[in-house]
Image 1 (cartoon, rainbow, N blue to C red):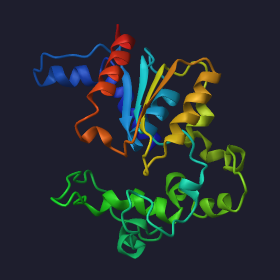
Image 2: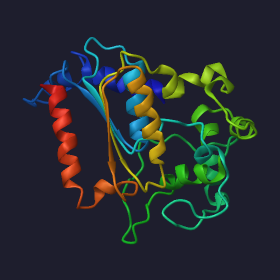
Image 3: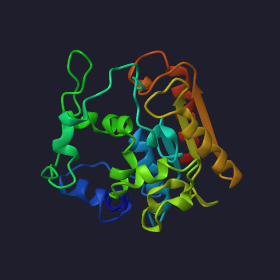
Length: 251
């Protein structure tokens, strides 16, 4: 996963990457590879952190934008504890056996080059793959699938307060906290205070860690907002403030 993220960022920022591809299809547009921001929502925020940490580019990213992004602190009960009552927007718990096709470690599903992101009229995702993160959070096995080491979550769960030193060395690069440094790009975090999918505490921890490194970081706390709050109207004011931050990075 990390390799794919770095390949994408390198392709976008390379002189032989995106701009060359645009030219080959007679598209007159081009990007300024010296002014790139890495951004993502939810799990995409986590990928943005990895890109900012691990990508080796001629022009480092001007900034990082994370909208209710995960990865600020992965060693919490939210990821490690098995849930026994509704935790995500009050929705009923899922039956893990219905997703064994995707979760099997002995007979994994065949690779796919795409999966629909559409939702049905009832607001439920059409693709069963869209439920996988929720199932993993529910079962407390998210880190098993993130690292590929099954049983890791159970071992960490047995500890009172697991730290990064309890994670095997070969997996630590997947935890953003390990790669933070004074050279991390300026960062803008946006998070709803009532988010039940990715708790706002993750963004608060990341903000504090970056500030301790003297990395410019702003956290916009959206009062009363749930996960994916920007899909609905009513948050234009805070988003306008975010856009102003981004514009400042690009000037």
